[in-house]
Length: 216
Figure 1 (cartoon, rainbow, N blue to C red):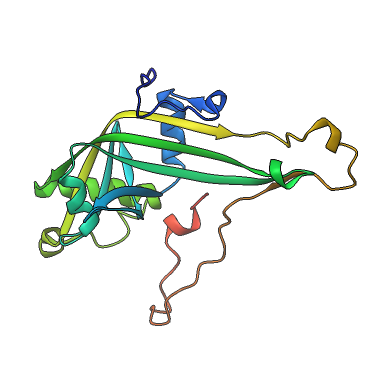
Figure 2 (tube, rainbow, N blue to C red; figure 1 turned 90 degrees about the vertical axis):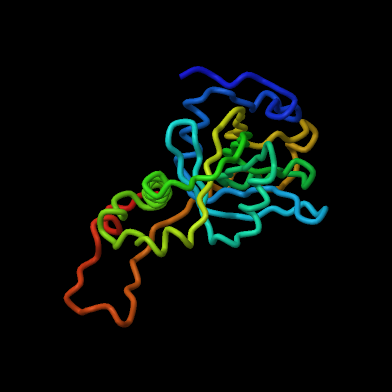
């Protein structure tokens, strides 16, 4: 699969030892989440918005309403970026200065393009849905013609990307090691809880396999 070459955009400067340009590593981080943050400029103001996504190959799909300001702004730009971050733990040092986080993050750069053809748009929506909860696309009603026309879908063909990962303990100053202050890592994780059915659900309706089998 190879690696992404470094450029002025994706090269990690601060904390370069934690950088990774391997495509397999980057894709693993991308596929392990379903919310990204996208930066765009609107009327001279930089804005960052969280949104759902899905990846197929080296393309990331995004969707929203036809009037979605963010997506329309992205299509007007030659190059855009998005970020994906997993928070894995709080790194608690003896000194406040050395507190940190354990995390996995990816920054992706590419050129956005409009997905207009109905079958391709439908495939993109399936990719997004299956990235959020595998198996759900075949359980629920898929978008009809009217809904497809009301949905704006864009593809971001990944041209450059980099990952940055911190997975270590505390880096305290040697002179602080004698302080009577607890230091270490407080691991964090998302947790799947008991599904909550809609009040108007038919009593005979069982929990869908995609929900039962969902893993974080």
